[in-house]
Length: 150
View (cartoon, rainbow, N blue to C red):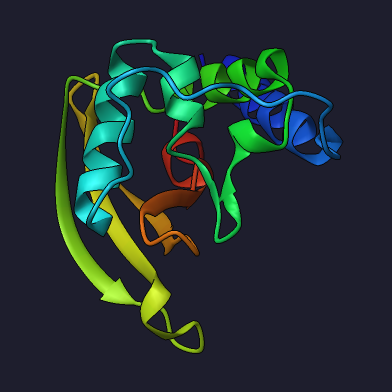
């Protein structure tokens, strides 16, 4: 099981590194509104991961400049979100803490999500950023926190 998760993590990282700008933009699905708060975007992201809704996950993942769906091809976004969702599979999650990230100002926060997977509890750091448009996106998920002790 551990080697499967490590391979999946490696695939996710390679897919991310290969992303060098896309040719098409994905239109936002109906009902997708920017998250108004850091905890809100993490909760939405985790719920979409649990529902295997990789396209919508892509609208909540990105940088200050915007969601990855605005720069990467849809197929590439779905592959990356599939890899992340599979690592984050859980029976339960709780958002535990939120704190500013030193040196990044008020537009970046770190949240800790406590996941329960197969009876094991693990804390997973998430970095979220406020976009230029004012909504919040998940910028980074510490997937190694999930896979390192399996």
